Length: 433
Image 1 (cartoon, rainbow, N blue to C red):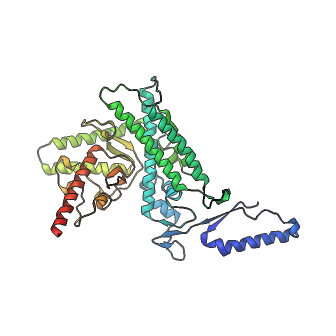
Image 2 (image 1 turned 135 degrees about the vertical axis):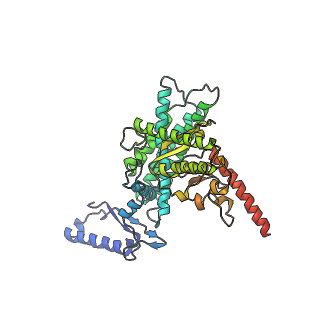
Image 3 (image 1 turned 90 degrees about the horizontal axis):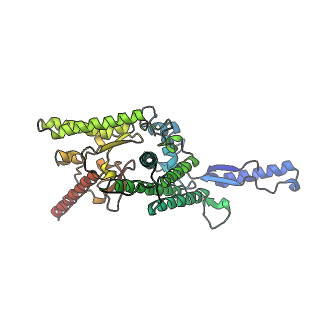
């Protein structure tokens, strides 16, 4: 075949492409001098017909002037002014949307900034695992260089999950039969299922690391650290598959110290991050322990929250409560980690530290709807919109927007807020009756 693949919009399948096949094969027959010299092979073996791209409920097209250029799309996805953030890549966010969130390539897809933000949040979750996983491997290797690490049930389970992910991913990428035919040309790649396999592996790996850290910090714990090989295998598998489908090094190399994208992981930047966290904790401690000038105390605490929730995330640094993983109750439990830079409007932040200075709705969540919001939607709307990524069946958040788990203190305050909102609903319902 002179041409292997011919692509086009689904609306061109008939009659445009049908006519093109007829003309091309008739032309080849004429040049060959008769049927005897005509090739028995079809003109083009593979045809790819793509679904239309929609925006705001209508087909995106130049004639309707409702299109967005690739340049504008990439620019709108930047967080830093020049798009040079450590893990920032609007192009990779778009690739993830195309790969796993836009549906079949044969079907129509709807473009929106909200859908791209969803893709960005999922990519952050993948990057979070790659960064945390590499850091965990380095720490485990340096602390237990001479210890033997015999594999137990946890190691076997994670390693088997890696093998299952590899097999399933390959099957989804090669394509599933769409009409019962065994002909490879009747198979269709399923990016959504492939992405789900990667996310399942991320959850398994994260649970493995968290369980090891919890056991290691338990009183009188004498057990050996978990083996690093299963995590290394999971990281390798995720990097390989992301590279296979076209992601750039800003995603596939996240967490590798030897890459230029490992901002915050070298010694100099790590010391700077540690100092920022130490200084913020010191200022907060002084303000909380001060008994004079209540208004000044509140202003200092608000500025500390703005630094944590707005300023630092914009440059790719997140401060979080390390009690999430080590289950300790010491005051100096705050630490930091590099993240995908994200835009956060100060007016959209959610304040969770206010319980330390009061229990008013104004400082607790900044969400006070005039009409009752359904309990399962409370943390999905208003000022909470975009703050969290995953929820349980009751609507309670289980992870932040970048995929990181909620701290115990934050979860406790959210549960209290949920209970308070439930009482508000019951009160208003009773008044209405």
